[in-house]
Amino acid sequence: IEPDDQIAAIGSGGQYAKSAATALMENTELSAREIVEKAMAIAGRICIYTNESVIFEELG
Image (cartoon, rainbow, N blue to C red; front, side, top):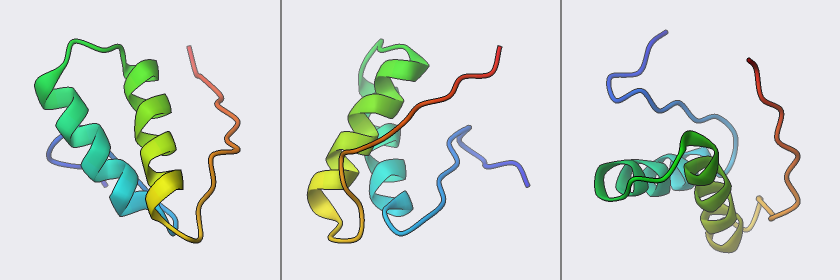
């Protein structure tokens, strides 16, 4: 499955994070890592099933 806008999200806070990431991607020059960090923080503040304790793993 390939998303149309190059952003994928799963889990209880996934749609909150995806919405935040979409807005950041369209309106900033942040790196992918920075967008993910900020989007997850926003999702953690909005979704009662998500928190801001996140571990990031990068492929590369």
